[in-house]
Amino acid sequence: MKPAPFAYQKARSLDEAIALLSEKDAKLLAGGQSLIATLNMRLSSPALLIDINGISGLDAIALKNGSVEIGALARHVQVERSEVVAKQAPLIARAMPHIGHPAIRNRGTLGGSIAFADPAAELPACLLALDGEIEATGPKGKRSIKAQDFFKGLFETALAPQEVLTGVRLPAATKNTRTGFAELARRHGDYAMVGLAASARADGKRLSDVRLAYFGVGNTPARAKKAEAALADGSIDAAVEALDLDPHDDVQATAKVKKHLAGVLLRRVAVQLTEARQ
Image (cartoon, rainbow, N blue to C red; front, side, top):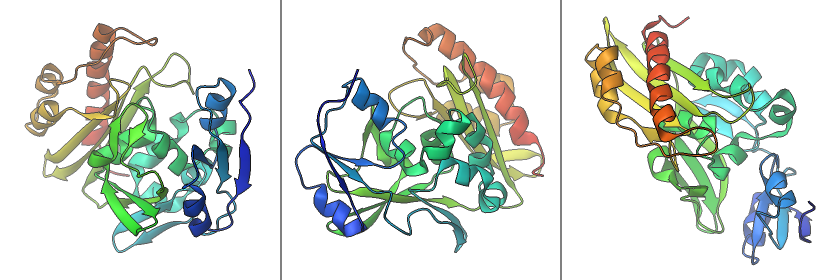
């Protein structure tokens, strides 16, 4: 299929992009790896596409004041190859190779993936596991939104109609940081049937501040808080038994299969969390 007719305008500044978003049925175009597909299938029919790729300064990756800051226009491949991300945000580094295929990672953007809020995508779950923040800029200026408050429903976020997602902020890793990531997909590069992003802090021989963020099990990434508590108590078996997820059937798998796979992934990720950080 071909997309429905639409107008196109390239924004030269963030202020211009925000102003253009006041137009009826306007959508932002960054990497376009999700948007173009929905346009072609006519699942999305905007009247105006606002291309933000010409806006400078939105692709930076930096360590500032104990946080890793990643601009919304940073391409996946840029994040994947970043030394700052590898050293200071190891969970993101673990997840990046699982996102699509090289051609997708060459064009797709971190901000686009998060703003699209696909419940089977890797990065939203990583932000939730890391207790990250999303920076949004609109007519009233900038504001920060906690990841736990950002993902509202299926492809739905806390962004206001005229706001642009401009970046994310993640706590920088310390020597006690532990992370884990795993997913199960029918083929590498496909959306996961179930996936798990996790972070914790080593506290002697135990773990504390365990955060288990599943994706592919509901309309948003979801934490398994009872399992987190059990894993912090030192029992992987008890954590699997305590998995408090309520997945639903979809084209990938039945709810029963998803619940089983969630336990499989928890066992794998628990081993990663207990490994000493390299």
